[in-house]
Length: 322
Ligand code: PAF
Image 1 (tube, rainbow, N blue to C red):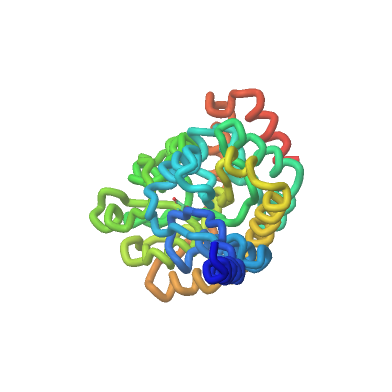
Image 2 (image 1 turned 30 degrees about the vertical axis):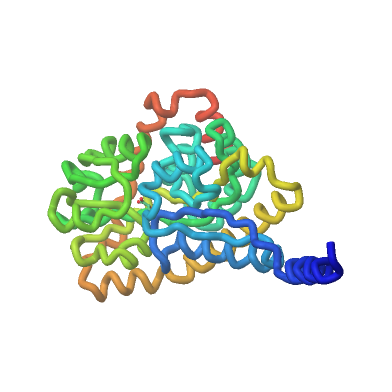
């Protein structure tokens, strides 16, 4: 090699070394849109990971159902087509039935209890169950307490639910819950605005932020503050992908997701009162204190059903209640 080419090769090598190494990219999927509770957790995770890794990791967020329904997203995470997701508790049900214990009605009386249990041993036990379906469970961020809305009548007690055509998440458990309450449930993915608008559905149940972000107050007249289920969002990764990471990266990813979840829970709770005011201002008729004893009585029978018969499911439910 002539001196000229040697110098040229040296210069090129120096230029390449001066360029920042390309960041390794993680694909992370959420079904809802920017501004939603799910997306806030995803954004905060991306921010933390990119900062703390000094740019070695970057996160590409797929939102607004770009990768399909939450059930389809879980399938894609299982296949490794996308590495991570923040997914509502409901759709895990058909792949990991043990997760349904988290959604048991009236399990958590308030946010503080939900935090204590989910951040403790029992939360970890449920996250560990995900491994048998190929997921690494990372953290619980928050969807929130679910409330009932509908376009037919004020719901003041469980009897008023009779026959309502209600959309439920793609989950055996949520379907059975609404059957037990006397409604006519249809499991389907998200979103559901046009079905509510066209009257294919009368009702839905979700935390208040969902009514606001998806403008459901335009197509739902009645809101009952039932708070029947505390709904978690579960951050998961493809287990094989996660296990192949270097230990330091595993620790960093878990830490960033747990911190993002803490941040998002506080953010979510700080919005709640404003969302309720907004629903009133938008003309929704709010039943503030429905007769929840009637809901408790009807939903208690779920525990005797086959879907809660497996010993591990019973054991986890007992543990979550302690
Ligand atoms: O009802 C659902 O499917 C979920 O609660 C939603 C709206 C996707 C938020 O997690």
